[in-house]
Each structure stands twice: as C-alpha cells, then as structure tokens.
Length: 322
Image (cartoon, rainbow, N blue to C red; front, side, top):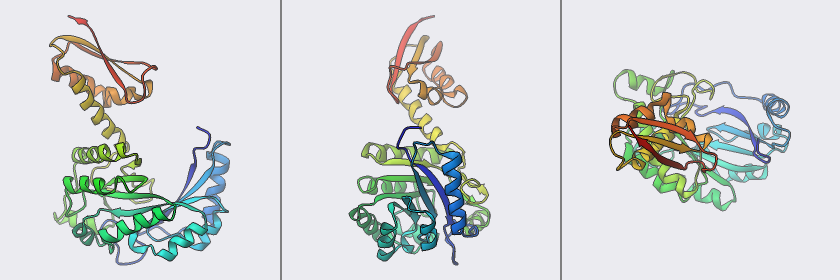
C-alpha cells in the first residue's frame, strides 16, 4: 500500500431512519453504537491496515453522526455522507470541530421533479448552496448521483454531472437498484417503474465520467453492492459487482475502434497496453478481441503488455498480413 493512503473504516448509519422513508430505501439496519465504532476501528487498525497507512472513519447514512459516535472515533479524521435535507449549518460547524475533513451530500439528482417523486425533501437550490458552503468551510465536498431515478433520463443525468463538475472534489455514481422492502419495489411490481438495463447504466455512467474525470473529480465508486453495503437485497436493476470495470472496458473498446480505423481487411494486429490495463483491454472474457476481429475483418488481434506505456495508453502495431 502506498504510504499515506488512508484506510477507511466504514460505518453504515442507514439512510432513511425515520418514516416516511424515501422511495429508494428499505427499512434501515439497527443503528450502530459507540462500542461498534470502537471495535471496527480496532479491527481495521490491527487486522486490515498497513502500519504506514493512516486510518479514517467514514460515516455513511442520512443524518449526521451523533456526538457519541464522533467521540468513539478517538480523534481520527472522518468523512460523512449526509442527506441535504438533514444537514444544518449548526451540524456542519459541529462536524468540523470534531474532525471532519469531508462531507458527501446524498444529492441523487438536481432535478426537482425527480427529488419530489423520490420522497426527498431538498431541492436543487439547497443542494447547490450546501456544496458551495461546504467548500467555503474548507471541507472536501463529494456528492452521490443516482442514475435511473423516476422522472430522469440519460440527458438529465449528464446535465447533473455537467452542473457539479467544477464544484466538487469527488463523486459516487449509483445506478438505481430496486431493493427488497423499498417503496420502489411496489412501483416496480405494479409496472409503474422500470429500472435501467445494465447496458443503459453503463452508457450513462460512461458519459458522466467523461465529463467529471477531465475536471479532476475523483470517482470514488460506480455502482453499489447491496448486501456488503448494508442495503439489503436487490431484486431488480443494473447490478454488477464490477460495474466500474464494465464502464472502463466500454471506453477502452471505443478507443480501440478509433485506433483501428483505416486498418485493411485481413491484417494481423498487436495491441500494447500497460500491464495493469490488460484485463480491460481484452474485455470481459476476451470479448474485445472477438469484437474487433469481426468489426474490422482482421485475421488476428492479440494483446501484449508493455511496461513502458502509461496507464490508459494504447499502441497498435501492424504485424503483417496473412
């Protein structure tokens, strides 16, 4: 592990801890107590962390962590994910005084109609005011953006990314999953809501990443893992345990198509990439190789690693005709 890279101790607080719950959330888990926070910190310090890696606590929920939970951090820096409608100026001052270094706002979207449909009480104006206020307070600011909410579209999700790319430090992209016990489950069963397909989720996430990454926004995560994240069970929606990999693989495939424009039929091609990029260059189960051969009528496509190339850099060599 690189020296100085923090190890996050995750604490799940649950999103909607009071009725009425929003459309997306199942019943929350039992709230953690200070003893659990202390035990998790001890576990990560002794079992999970490199001796050179600093610890950082991450509170992930709807409301701000309680004073008792903050005290249990023992002075460690922390970040907190909070719903905009549950965050006040007084909360921000308290969190900063207790050691907060960043706040992620669970914005979902900046489309007011969709927020209303989802049962969230904040609106676009409040979220933008909070983002600017948190930055003024010296905090790292992140947002959670949901893709596939009712009353949203591919273009509205892209607009969300465009709106915040120069305002935030980090982002999580969460394609909407239909979770057991959530009100969205009933809408799905009654055919009033249709989740995105996996392919559509990849397309929208890719378009958002291509706006956010050039602006220097850190992409913390793409997708959710319902059970490990404490969300319960997903019954529908674009779930994949490695969604970010699929998005990156799609981007690489498009880049390879551009590299191969003009290559004549029957050619034999070697694609060189950094060793860490070999899997996404090949694609899932070597799918990119098969796709490129068929699309460009090539005799052979092979992938070779080249440590002299940078991450994300590709080179294509013409290795002869049949």
